[in-house]
Amino acid sequence: MVSRVRGVRRGADLAKVAGEASADAAVEHARLAKANIAPQDLTAAAFFDVDNTMMMGASIFHFARGLAARKFFTNSDLARFAVQQVMFRVGGRETQDGIHSSREQALSFVAGHTVAELMTLGEEIYDELMADKIWPGTRALAQTHLDAGQRVWLVTATPVELASIIARRLGLTGALGTVAEHEDGVYTGRLVGEMLHGRAKAHAVRALAAREGLDLRRCTAYSDSANDVPMLSVVGTAVAVNPDSALRDTARRRSWEIRDFRTGRKAAKIGVPSVLGAGAVAGAVAAGIAYRRRDA
Image (cartoon, rainbow, N blue to C red; front, top):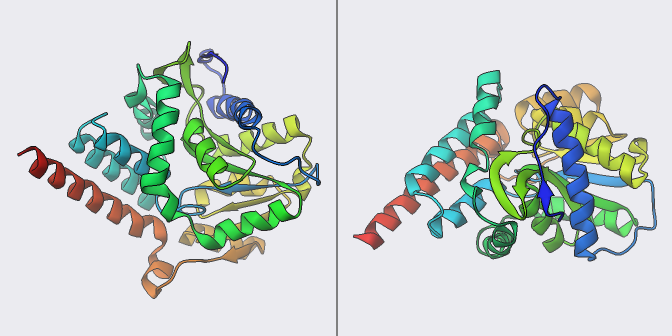
């Protein structure tokens, strides 16, 4: 990565700024990784959302659990973060105050830590808490694109450093993710633009396509959430994976393909976000109890 990633001028379109910054970071991370074979199909690619699409649950929460185990913050902070995630995922509504609050809180816990430190921890936490949560069916879909000689990118609100680790571990091309501001390799606790969510994801996909010479009409995007309709709408082929009810309805109206790798009537009825959200809270509480017992 470059040694300095700075904020933006007041009044800028933060979603567009976030998308542009994410595309720049994605290309740089992929260049540094040097892990992927040169694609044979130069103008087509696939874009995969991460949370509940490629991975069971929220990747940032798994990451936060790992950081809590390393005493980056308290277990009450983790439980509060889990509740916020559940309310957001289940409610599915965004307000200006909510977005501002999320921007203020997102990634603030990394302030003062180095990019190198978080990358090292991300590798460890992936092995501990994420590797066994990849949806096999979604991973197989990604592989079909790789086998066709296409590039495959993750697109997620998760920090781009962590997203890039997930992509590399899965053998994918790279990842678009939220860009945290850092100076001389040290995080400031602020974001560049905003979280890569909603419109910002669509901006990021467009920006990456421009940098990589992709024809978006030949590209495919996958997601579980109605929040990603902007991203799904900018490509030629959209696929709803483990969709929430709103995305399922949209997919049916627009004749988008639907893939559901979940099992059980309950999950199909109420959707993975709420099921996993409740599990996340339970996990946070259990983790807090375990730490209290250990420290007693």
